[in-house]
Length: 495
Image 1 (cartoon, rainbow, N blue to C red):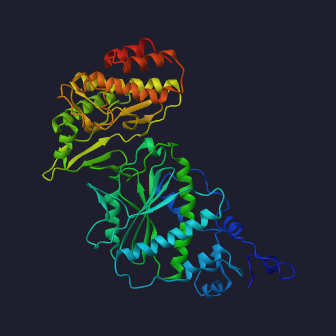
Image 2: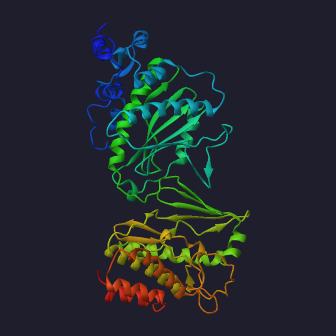
Image 3: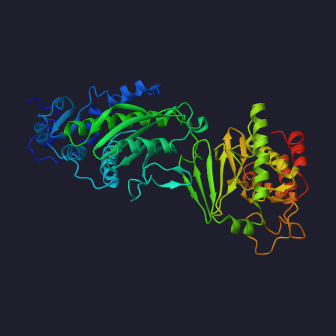
């Protein structure tokens, strides 16, 4: 047999006494990850299919003993590399290829555990012994539940069983079932959302897989949820050694493809990945791609505690929707978060709304950024104040970014009427300090402007402009209405 791995002399030294040197990095680079993948994104399903299942030149390092056994598998020899030493990658790949699933699987959890273990061990080995490696998080969210129950759900959207995240972007989704592969595809369809060009840039698809029992099927998830899922290649049966090898090789190619996808998405440090959950005391927020789903439990208690009303919140969102339509017509960025439909409260007193667009955490790195932030927030305040509403929670966490020097105010659930009653001393809202309220302990439109001043003061320390400093001072002295502030920004402060 013609051995293609490291020679015996190289493994043991001339006298056979040299210590064993770990060669996993050399093996993986030379036989699995070299040459580097084409940096261009695939433009269609056929190109993804070709990249995922073109195994030309790939060889998986395995033990010499397993290599001899695998010679019985038709076509296996050309993709296996025998080794006589217990290098880490050799041991890992050999174990995965020679170990058949422990059947029978009793439920979807068994499928999930087997498939996820296979994926995790392959990609962890590639990441450990490659340079530069793909920086990713592989998240699993499988609940112990009957097959008739869909995957873990927050509100009306589902979170996939498996997600790969790189650059704070979800790039791969997976669903696992006990025996019904069609049901796994149904769940994939349910979890899909439209991909935001803001967050995904030129990337027009996600990689996906469906698994049921020992069957695994790769697929492509187009960027628009109304486009059908596209199957990639044939279904793999992991009971057979030949298909376990094919699955392992496809995972190597998927790893390379995901590295290209990761490099293609825009660099947005403040981005929240798809399906991210922000859980607060009485609410849940779920990132859904183009939109954000928000749910508040026990809304009656919430509105009493926050001194607001459903009518005030609905009015604010109605104003925001009209403003968004105007911004779209004029081709400019919107300043106030909108919604797909008016907020509702169901019989169980659960408040729900789906807002858009989905931005990312604000970044202020120049005085031009600060000026743009001030303009956006003051325009949002003007919209609300004209309708005799106050936001009451103008803070930097409630301002997201939509692009360079494009900012938008979110979180309208704290909105109230500007003529609200006197607030009790035990009222809990971060912005409702004694300095923000008027003499009668009411939160007025000038209270909002004071809070905007505080918001801007956080970033002002990095800049020395007299105009910027004066602007913030006047806001915190309650000398500016929203209209007056916008006039100052237009005429006096021009960075």
